[in-house]
Image (cartoon, rainbow, N blue to C red; front, side, top):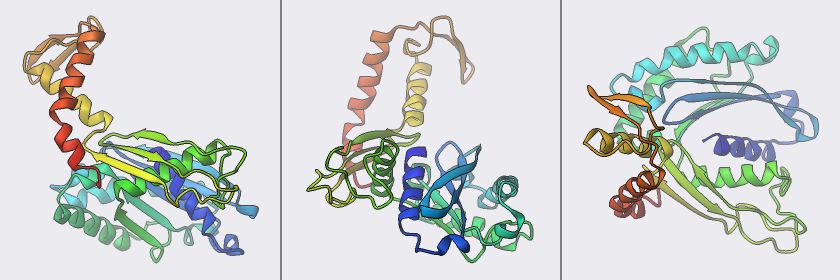
Length: 277
């Protein structure tokens, strides 16, 4: 998710050694989610002050290329080339690139994940137009716990409850959050501050529920609707074509809630089983 992505950069900023800005002033990070891949390019200036200089998303997500892993290369290479225009030409070759796959990739079997990462890595390595540092290219699927931790870092960093040292301010207690992504949901609760010195990641409670994201739930609602259920979750009068079946939304919020609760109840065992995702 976007929240997790920003949190990962905060952690990256916190771990950047003094003086590193001269050699790696820009960082490129991809949030490779279930619905698409969003590239962020950050500038890290003096005193670890970060700013975003480029944000753009391409669709579909990497997991959609499970049957054609090599198909990942062209759209991402085009995205990277466009983003690199926001970086001074003399610095582009030193920009580290992190491509982080989230729930969409976690839903795939390990061998399909490896095939996608392998094809993407080989394609970028071989591409003469790849604008960033090939030696600093990092690609992997992150765990749901990592994603949740990064999200709670983001929430607290953006509300001035922590700085880049990641320590919780005693006078401004940290907050938890529910991060609703496309294919998973993370719940993260930070530790209580102890004299203003508690680290946001030490003792944090994080649970991830794979398959319980907004997009996945919406797909399930559509499937139930196409099987004859009332189109209660769509605005009144909204026309949709589901596998050739013409349906019209009724905008019935109470009935929509009943449908969603039924879906959640039917998947409760799966939800519980997917906590470590």
